[in-house]
Length: 119
Image (cartoon, rainbow, N blue to C red; front, side, top):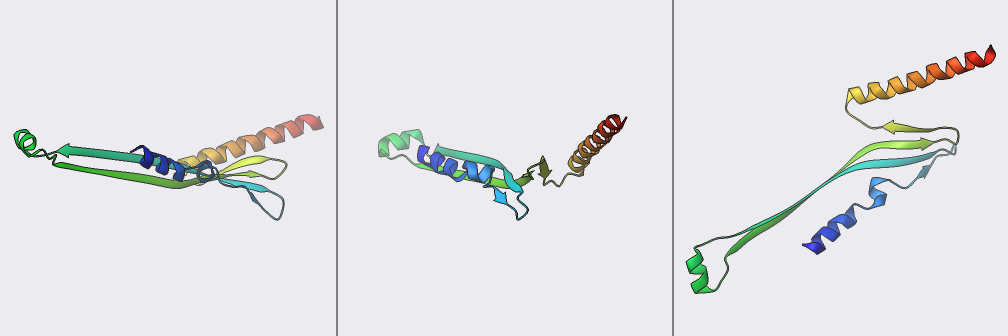
């Protein structure tokens, strides 16, 4: 069981969760990241009558194990040398709306700072 758990853990190393950086022609660095969900289940049971097991000296046993690993791309960190931003990959429209609202607030704040500097 320990060996199985070690092998499964080895599948999900840091390079799976945070990918290797990708450098674009413009010099930007793109780092992909992934959401990893993992489940590991085992179970077993002895069957038959206890009296029969003792007489026969055999252990009728049934068992099983299962593992599920789900890798889902979550987004990218993009560093262009001036700014670092997060680009999310999502199916939820609310997440996109929240992300755009953050960009809008940042844009308005930059405009206000620029207007204050001119005065």
